[in-house]
Structures are given as structure tokens and as C-alpha cells.
Image (tube, rainbow, N blue to C red; front, side, top):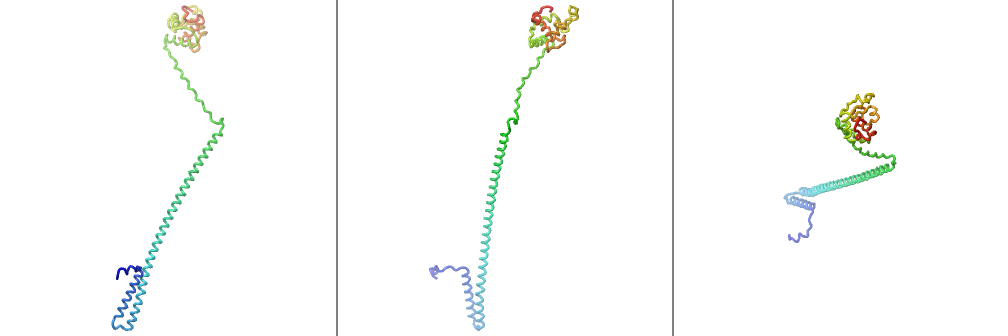
Length: 260
């Protein structure tokens, strides 16, 4: 057949092709039965019946296959559509859930901020309402007391006794010098704090002179200096009382050069 003749023909569908094939097969069968010699009228009728039976069977099988294929395709399409709808619904539900969670977090943060602001305002109002008298007074920090200098110690000998007595005399305003005190001590007792005179007029009168500067008891009691011992034989107490007496009578122990 020329090539240009086929270009005008339209393509046959699968169902149409199967139908044509069935018709062709039925025609061929009819020709076979007709061509058999000696076939009677009964045979011709049987052939016609066979041909009639062939067409419906072929068309029935083709229809059933097509319907099954269409049903399968439709079922697959429905399944795919359902799957797509389920995925879309799941995505939408997840988006809605995330939006709700975000909105809840924002609301919680705003509520906490509002509570903090309210609490701060309440504390400020309470502090403002407290009267000044109710507020605890600030205790003044006591000034550091100057450390007292350590008490000066003196050696327990004639030099130490004279120096300690001079320190007490300076505080009490009693005049006298180291040289004047030492000179009179050496004349009166030779530096013996336990010296006692039992032969002079004082001894005869019952009040002997005693100690480094030979002081009688009445004079010691009258001119005793506060802060020293009341023991007449105590070296510092004896020197200080004698110097106090000499200052009153002679102006200073420095002015005494003989019995006094």
C-alpha cells in the first residue's frame, strides 16, 4: 500500500484492534466449515452456530480485561489521592500545632514580664511607705581608739628608782633633777632603801627616819604622792614623797645639801 495512503488513517485503540481480530477469526472459521466437502445442511447449521458463538466470547473477554485494568488504575489513583490528602492534612496539623505552641510561649513570657513589673512596683511602694523613723538607724562606726603605749618599765636598782620617780614627778608638777636626788640619797642612806636612823632626835621622839631619803612617817603620810605605794620603805614612794616635801619647803630637792 502506498505510504501516503496510510497517513490519513487514524490509529485504532486496543479494544478496536481486539474486536477486529475477533471478527477476522470468526470469518476464517466460517470459511473452513463451508469448504469441507459433503457437508450437509446440519453441518452448515452447526457451523453457523459456532461462528455466532465465537464473536460474543471474544468481545466478552476483551471487555472484562479492559474493565479490570480500568478498575486497577482507578484504585491506584484513589490510593495516591488519599495518601496525598493525608500528608497534606498532617502538615497542616503540624503547622497549626507549632503556631499554637509559639503563641502560648509568647503569652507566657508576656505574663511573666507583667508579674515581674507588678512585683517591682509593689516593693517600691512599700519602701516609699515606710516612715523614716521605722527605718533601721545606721549605727555609727566607732573611731578606733588609739592603742595605749605599753607601760615603761624601769630596772630594779637605784638608777631605775630615781628615773621612775622623776616620771611621776613630771606628771604631778613636782620639781627636781636626777643629780639633786642622787646626791641627797647618797648622803642620807648610801643608796640603801632599808636604811633606818635609830639615834637622832627623830628616833628619840619615836619616829625614826627611814628609806633612801630618810623620811619620817608623819612627813611621808602628809606628802605622799597618789599612784605610789603607801609603804615607807618602797624606793619610788620614798623618793617621790621626799621630793614633794622638799619642793614645798625648799623649792626643790636640788636646793637641799644637808639634813632637812
